[in-house]
Length: 288
Image 1 (cartoon, helix red, strand yellow):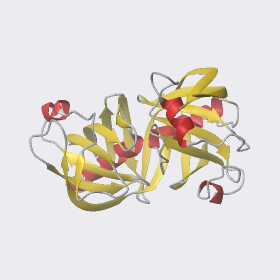
Image 2 (image 1 turned 90 degrees about the vertical axis):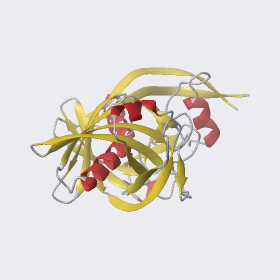
Image 3 (image 1 turned 180 degrees about the vertical axis):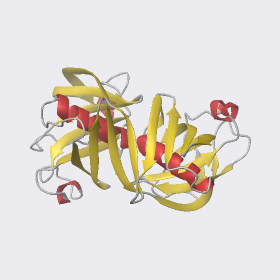
């Protein structure tokens, strides 16, 4: 094993979706698959669903991130298995909290900042103790069958793109949702070449223009997580579609807490929820 010195890091989460966060403004310490796997390991590393590097656009070494306006803060996001991801809805909110707590930016209540991601620029606003991210327009796609441990038969799922790929499956009851075993990735038919996050939802009520759903998710590259921000948007927009666009605001309950999804007049989906830093530290992480 080779010891990798970490000069400083933070651990944060958004409704239980947790991340290791590293500040690298000038791009001096690029991430690698091995480094990410070591940091995200819950037994031998710090532990997290993903690793996020804060770097200025133009210095990231990633062509997509560096295409953003020079100096823009870029979220270099990697899944726990060492694969690169386009976007993370919980991650981008926690990322902005990290920038604030690290005194890399200043943001008053009600102000916003543009963050470069591999899915384009994303606006994040501070709203009291919560953060709201404009994830932009979403896209509904075709259908595919989804099989998962705990389901008696494969169920139809709807493709939804929120900057990264999702498949949303509606279930009939909370009992079905709780019976799922998401330790293994659900099987998709037809197979998605790029993989996909898979959300299982139980629709609730719609009243006064506000809908509610419960959700569990298996994230591509991370396994089952307590929450998925882009997944919450995908689940809400799929349920909105199935309901005949009966509501533009949705409350999404996930195992790690509660998120809110709202569609604005431009057709952009906003994700609002908490972003928490739980500790800072220094240490050595092995690279295997």
